Structures are given as structure tokens and as C-alpha cells.
Length: 164
Image (cartoon, rainbow, N blue to C red):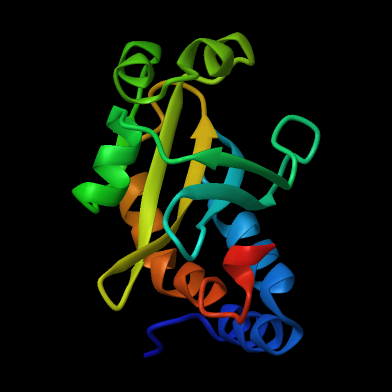
């Protein structure tokens, strides 16, 4: 019995050797294959914790790489950075409770998001976020994303990843 399927294991090893972009591509494929997930993004925390920026995405047109967002005193930042817990919003109403730009996301056709903080040595280094249709965040979908977090966390250990 193997904990990780051997093909996936080989892909992970190969991606680690190639660098963070390849490892992000692996995680994007895995999360993006879950029912109803349409977009996967990676946000990195600046070393001084003053801002976040997008370092990876499955949709460069609507969620381009780069762009810095200052830390804000809102529900999303408090949940991710202060509480170090995931944001789970499975409907437009739940999005509006935690995402400042919920109206924009709903206008783009999104109805759900799962944003999970990546915590290394007690610090939030960033987040992995999945966006998709309302009602997709079943316990099995959330559990599937959780199984990928150790692999996603490796992305945030690459030198300079938070400074891109």
C-alpha cells in the first residue's frame, strides 16, 4: 500500500527538482480537477507581513501574477493571518461575509471560495485559494484540498518566493 499514488509521487519529485512554477502547476491540476473548481491561485505574504501578492494562478487573464494588496483589517485577513484558519464560503452570501471584492467575484460567475493559509514554523507564508461554483465545498472537496496542503506548502519554502 502506498500513501501517495506512485505516478503522483514521481510528478511531485520532478516538480520539486524543476522549481516552484512546476510544483504550482501540479497543485493547480490536482485542485482544478475537483468538481466545480474553476480557478486556483497562490498568494504569498511579503517578508514584513505588510502585503500579499499573487505568485501563481490558473487564470492569468482574470487573476494576473503580481500586484500587491496591503494587509487590511477585514474578515478575510483576520481569518487567514490572525486566526490561521481557512476561509470557506460556499455561496455568494457567504462570499460577501468574508471577501471584500465578493461582488466582483459573483459578477465573474463565482459562487464559492476556499482559501487555506499555508503555515510554516508558525507563520502564515501565504494562501492557496480555489474559486468555483456555489455549493462545491462539500466535506470531501475540502478534505481533498487538505491532503494537498503539505505539497502546496513546499512552494513557499523556495528562496525568494515571497518577493516575486
